[in-house]
Image 1: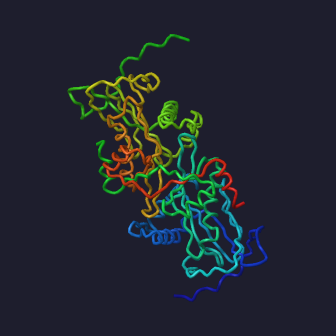
Image 2 (image 1 turned 120 degrees about the vertical axis):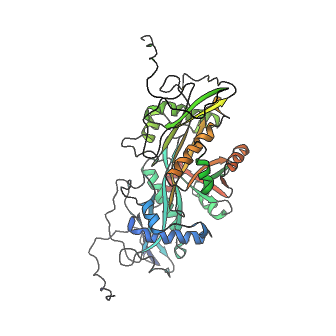
Image 3 (image 1 turned 90 degrees about the horizontal axis):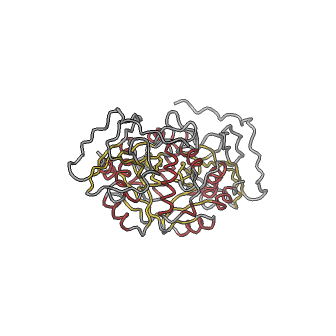
Length: 234
Length: 234
């Protein structure tokens, strides 16, 4: 293999102007942007880490190829009209401005001020485009519908922040990015599920104003049972 | 107002051939087809009846106009890629064959054999196109996504059968039509919610092979809380 090329000189691209920088501590620059098909290897690793965290690796069968074809099919519909992924990236230096301005979305930039720097043992694995940009988490969501309101909403299927970036407000930032998108588009609701024993999460959601639908139970038909039931009209 | 025109002569359109007709009792002919924008007045009435049935009319704010613009927007995406409505229609005579063959869907026809005829006090209100065709129910569903499977599924938001048509298998027929569509498209799951005190429904769903996700709780962010949370990244 040829030796790696020397790193390119610093980009002259104009950088984001941060209004929330603090002069003390460690500023971590963060960005939430729409994922594209080139992000699939990172998305795949994040979903796998989520399965490990939830002790559900026996249910995990996604591959990079199956994620690509289902999340980013040919003739993909516009973002937000179908399955949509926001990636959370962090960097020790300001992000360059990128041209990802969809009709209703521009990347969200925020700095997080910490007392101690973050040590990321998997920084190389999750290296993203840019000098020292690392993928730290994601949220996967898609439209749902309320017939009583006659309005779409968003359903959040997954929200995940890698371990060394937790408890720093990034999860809230990702969820809020979805809520902001819903509000911008005039949508009526954002919904997701939580495990009933996860009292800390429930407390957090209630504090942010979410209702917990205590009487509802999700029903799931899958596998052989789905196939069998699919045939009863035939 | 002019006097009503005389009814048109019987249509020469070829009719569906039913293989499940029984020589005794009353055969009710039924059809499940994709709804279109001309069905919105019926869909609106059905959703309102559902709100009355669930004692949730205080949450009902859908209008024909808001349903039209959200369920059947201009440049509607193809059926099944977004919000989709199947209508259940019944008739005392065989349905004509209609040309509603999408790549993955043809109307489903079935006869239901009853000991007694059904008296429908709202037959005029729910009259559909065709000689004596009446709208009896609907199911509203849309794609969801499992990141562990890297596969879409369907989420059933509403399933409703008008009162005089209940307990005759029509609800099962509608749910099975969604399951059949999921199976045809290679989708991984069909999901919906049920109220935890509705033990008859839960028993029915479990018997058909559905899992009830006992530990999951749905969280909902809506109204002012949604707007407030949407602004925290700003």
